Image (cartoon, rainbow, N blue to C red; front, side, top):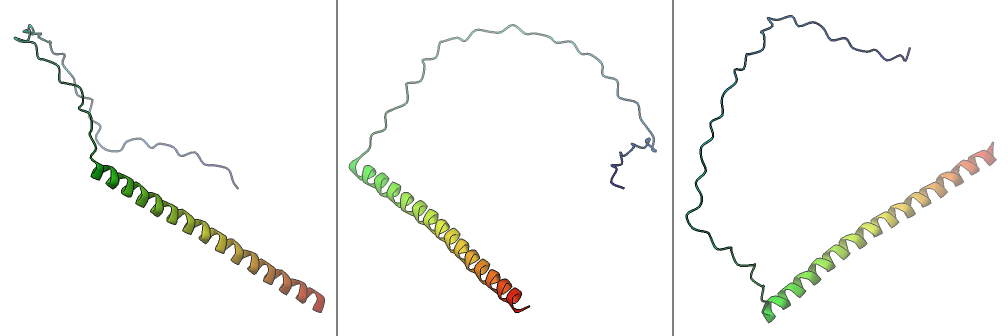
Amino acid sequence: MLRPRIPTNPMPTGIVTPPAVIEPTTVVQHPVAPDPTPVAPAPARPTVQLTPGAVIALVGGGTAVALVVGAVLVSMLLAVAITGASLAICALVIRSLITADAKRH
């Protein structure tokens, strides 16, 4: 009853074309010309200089991000706690209904 059935692949029914023949090609290498003048390397990355206004903006932005992430996490925790408490109350009510019904019979 619960035996798996292994599918069989049917034979192709249409016109089967043979694979295309690939002819080899020859590779011709050209001589490489050297660079006429050496190029000076690019200077290292410039150092970032922060102004007092930029530092205040970074600190304010970081604080705002931390507050928003904290508020989201606290609200998720509160939602889980409320759901758990609701389920516990429902379980107590159902258990009391079942025991009250059993005592009546």
